[in-house]
Image (cartoon, rainbow, N blue to C red):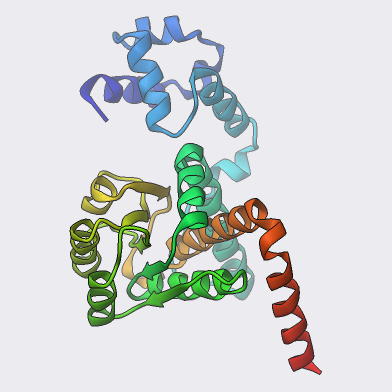
Length: 269
């Protein structure tokens, strides 16, 4: 955030319960900023405007004391099975909810349009991000998209070097600073392919360099929890992209969906 946006954030943090009753003008005056700064603060959090921010805050404040006390919880020694089930499920749910609050709908629409018309779609990711790419490939293959997931450094660089301007590359990295992914980004620029980044909400090198950015918002508390939260949020974005592309091109892909479903059903028998 900018200095003035941080000033708004600091004021809001200390007076959460009072904010819903304030007008944007009053909040600007009390935080010694301006209405424009308050609006920029709201948009930095993923809201369309001050009213959306206030409604969301009001909902959060009214959700109950027990729920408010709950935070993202890491793996801890000695937790009961019931506690683990509840904590993991809560973390995953909040990962999706937090991501929806920062996900730019216009960027999603741009990504869907790109994937609809791309001649070839490459998915690049390492580790847990690679699993997300493999899930995406499995889904998009069902609607006969020419796509492949590349999940090791050498494969990613080789594939990126073969891209053409009519192709698309989706680069998946929670940190947005993975060396192999940034190298691939440079190659896509060189060969003028269009890029979509799926990465956490920050001004990372990947977010700044990609043509289209789909943000996730989820903390990885320590190395013990691995990439559980970010993986769930990224998989949700993949589902959104697949469902949107299939919906836009439904008449042309319906037969492929039916054929792949029937093939899988026949295999079960």
